[in-house]
Image (cartoon, each protein chain N blue to C red):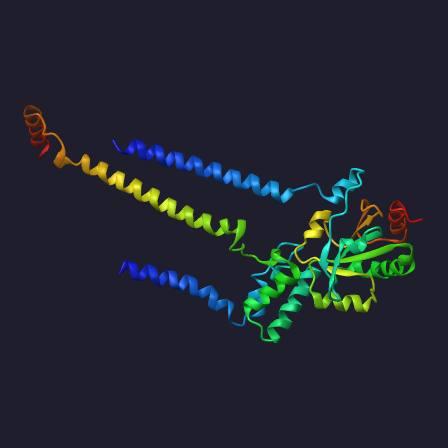
Length: 150
Length: 183
């Protein structure tokens, strides 16, 4: 069951971006995902001349029926890779994708090991495995407890 | 007891990871800074060699350094969305037309611009000097430009002798050309 869920999650993660890149986006969607190369904010937050020109170009390409990936590719070709808000999936930028996943996996392993060690230690110190009390001391404790009872 | 080697291994892995990430950071920063830019060299009073150029022309074909060898060059970074570029375009065009016979060439390097808008701009301002595109900002970065417009003056020996950040005026243009050997 767990294996099926993992495969399904992986399939959804892989298919969603690919499907998104093939559909026709809205102006707002692209403006919130692309960066103005001179002011380094997303286009929807910028009124810089280059941002206004990029918005005009996006509007033209949407009207022409281009898909999201086609419009993004066109803007990268015209203005450079710095217009992409997301890091590239190759070269040095790939680390931006890999390192957080590696960090989560390493953290999960560390938590798992810590939990396993903690539960092992707790089992080792459980009352069932503890040494029996000295009979005299046990008797003393019983007497004290009886005295405390109303 | 297995926990001690395990702890030692985890600590070793963590230290190796931190050292590895630091190494990557140093490598990336050193590669990003790279060699000193042309602008920095000119500011210090040096005459740095003009970076090689091999770029696509706005009107088709390519422009290579070989075609500019032995000429005085005005390398002008511009964009169609840049307002000061509109002011200086007629002056650059006039300079190109009047000094072309004396071996002066103006090269307009279109920066962070859409081709269609750049072509419209060139047509509107009747720019006939060579216009090239620098979509990856490679030439822009090598020169160390920080915006548009900016102009660099290259003497006949291929050395950069002057830098004008912002729009050129008749005075700064004449001064740059004079430093490049045009009186």
